[in-house]
Image 1 (spheres, rainbow, N blue to C red):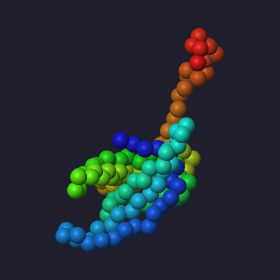
Image 2 (image 1 turned 90 degrees about the vertical axis):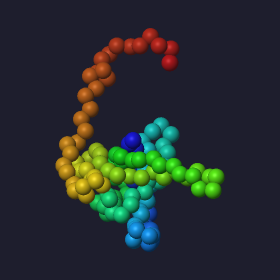
Image 3 (image 1 turned 135 degrees about the vertical axis):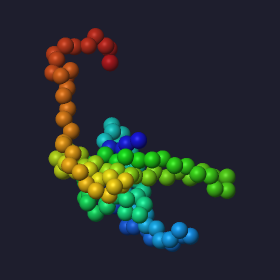
Length: 125
């Protein structure tokens, strides 16, 4: 799944220790580019994506996984990011959590031939 929008907040990392060793989680908030924008809190574990590469206000596409789990009869859902792409004029970059490397991605191109036509619809709305 993907979420596109603007980074509006990067939250301080949380650090802890489990049976498997030390872990780090950092959340950030993306405001979607919809008619009615939504704010989505996305978490990143163990520096899979270096959030220091992104600024507040950056337009991004975040690739996410949704995960729910049950605990004492209640369900909890996490949104985990595994790749972030910088969109628009900000830069042409992509950061992936699987390899931890950056790669250059060309800026998106939009070819809307349909928007150039002067035809009118007969629809009442």
